[in-house]
Image (cartoon, rainbow, N blue to C red; front, top):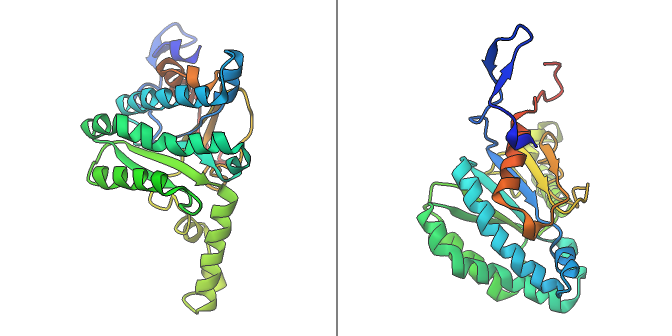
Length: 256
């Protein structure tokens, strides 16, 4: 396992040097696709909502782990624009989870100096969900530690379309010309404009796809997949993902 790799590596001549990708190489922004709650529940003979409830406990465990590791931003894919297709009872349960989580964990988040943020559209979200998130954002607004960023009613294609529409409108208004459009401008019109792009993406449950999550922002992120279902994903698994990240060389298209 990657988290059991030694901090020291032996040279061919028998001498030992410190690994140049060691523990201080912590990803600044970790994004997680939290997947497998329903399958976890089914394997235990439980309703799907039991998996979501168990997954909520994992959220606080991984938030603690990220904070203790020194991660600056933790983005959690909590509810996608496609998740509205699920049964009404399940969607209603999922909409109530943010309020339940924040009500039970907000004091600890405050103690840890965590700032709560959200990306995604408030449109179509129930008022109780929006109000719970807004209260947490307001209460933690002045915190300067880990940013806990929930992607809620979020879809990357929708985000990119809106960014293009905003830019096109400004071009039409004469604010700038088409030739002014570059990657930086697109970045500045995304919902994550005030955040660094993820260094590391983690997806649980064995699925090997991005599922319309941060398609622009993940262009050069390191990807780490595990078969573990989200309710069973632990601090040890998180540390294993970080250790795997530390062993990789991020070349951004270069040779070295």
